Image: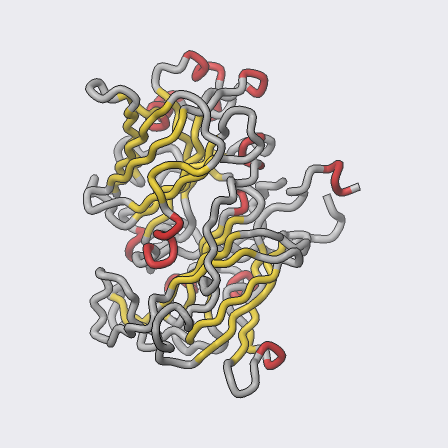
Length: 232
Length: 174
């Protein structure tokens, strides 16, 4: 187990004024480092997750199919030693094809899609693989700054081996022209780490006559998460 | 440890304001897991640097229960008043490791590019003085980590989470 800080600039700062909501919400006091060997931080979480049959297919959760470009998003969840993280809960949520969330607080005047909720969940297999079938989300405006638009993205929430590997993040699509103006994307100072957030178009995962494939691998923090004895 | 340099971990991004779509179906007031012990309720209230309620946060709780090797888990979104409530059992402390009874808390919200980690302890617990983590916290800030028992409602503990400013909650780098 590790709680090393990792590569400088590979995680976003808490206080990042270009993203305005950080200004009154980011703590001002420095974080206090937890000791590395706190046993309960290494406990796995109780796996109670209810996973339904169509939970990883966001195009089959209603009477009809949603509007938009059908896509398959898949990849592997690994730790910092590139070992698969099996049995990890992966939860996703996203806007519909026109950039509108199925949420009462979303006031963007774009149409809702009665056939799209935009929520999915699955668990990784023994090789750390996950797959979602969905539609490509639209970009949408927000009021962070003048003419601000979020690049198309899918929100991901992951439970790895324990409390320390918890990750909530966003997956982006390749070559999005909005990256340059997006403070969330730009909050990652390190270029290599930033590119970790961008999926890759994958023809081998593209299903003929059906859906485009995107590959997105996720690296969770922590190495030596397995007790030493099991690694010999 | 392996000899090869580690892969760079995927960066965190904010949970945003619409996380309810994806996370609410996995949310419940009662923690899931092997719960044994004294029943308690925990009332959180999340406020920002202006003292205003944070109506779009999610709180996650992880805690030891009995001698089980898995953590009990719960997740709830805050309401318009910044509050959310859980029901669980009081976790045991671990005197051998110098740990008082505590609950690991994750705070996720719009405006938090990374989730915040804090720890909830129980006011009045005689084991607090020997706790190895509290010992790392400046004395004046330790009260921000104490849940306070409600005087009228037995079993109810209140835990304010102040993201910023006066009496800012202590957050940890885990």
